Image (cartoon, rainbow, N blue to C red; front, side, top):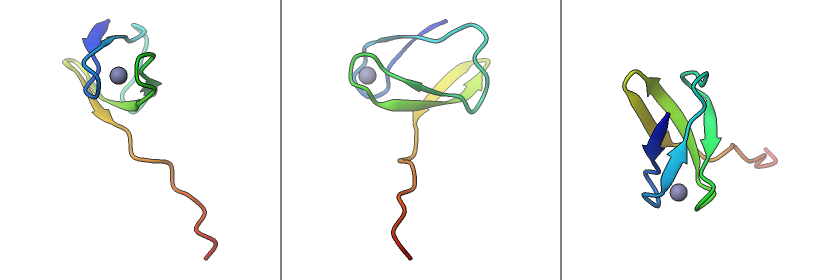
Length: 55
Ligand SMILES: [Zn+2]
């Protein structure tokens, strides 16, 4: 599957066996994108991994 990066609008190749919730990173801008839906293909910028704030 091919789609457009929501961040840099570059071409993004999504493996055909990708699943909802998978995180892919854009080779163009390194933004991490989460697959929200595969039919139709919808991507959103993944939330930043939670840091350990040392609580
Ligand atoms: Zn990108």
